[in-house]
Image (tube, rainbow, N blue to C red; front, side, top):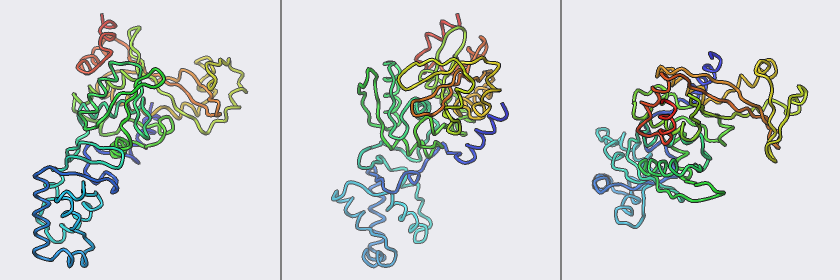
Length: 360
């Protein structure tokens, strides 16, 4: 649908994201620790500025406090702030222009704030199977504090393994008969750099990042598709169906009753409205103008992979809060298309047995 592609293109234009992050893509309130070799580089810089300028004189001239390096090297402080590193990079550009800052950035081993610690290697490459799971499972997670919740134990343990390979320290906990993995706000900082808007999931309506959709890394794409199918998809009836919801803030929920559609109460918070397919576009054209951007971007990716798919609205529902939402399905049919997805995802897909059964 050209209109849908225009929507996702506009989002990519405002939030293109990138597949490789530097330490300066993290907030300046975060801190880092270096490898032993990184500590030696810092020590040499400290000695250079102390010998040639004097630490106090250099501080008066540049407002650069090299004593924080001394405290860190003597283990009187546990870390160096990113704020300090940003200032250091600026100073080195003027006083040591031949110094390659990436030589010290690549020696960073841990990034942390008061609550989260992340074992990092910079520049941080997100185009890996491990970060593909962080991205793919975002759509089934509480994104603001990144909490992945699922009842499928196989997927949860796979996710934990992948998150740990990313560099996160995480545990599995139980809540409301489901398993939880909480990564904290550091995951959100990484996702923001990747191109995500950090809001509640349904309101953010994030597409896949543009760089991910147009990636040529088959291992990355296989893990990305597998994570989305395992978390959001259903396999059966010779098809794969991936589901997502979107919210329509500009629709008054009372207007739905005007059309007198059959109404089914499915919970204390939700009413579902069913209506004939042929009347959908006539009734709520605005709904078709606001699809889940994950499914639209996923459709673009599948087209690149020569896989045909269809996108449709399945139902409209109203929350007790009065918010109107719609449920959309992306479907992949035909043996050719399913075999293409199988070949790409078979190394990672938890639901591989179901897909193999469908292909028999």
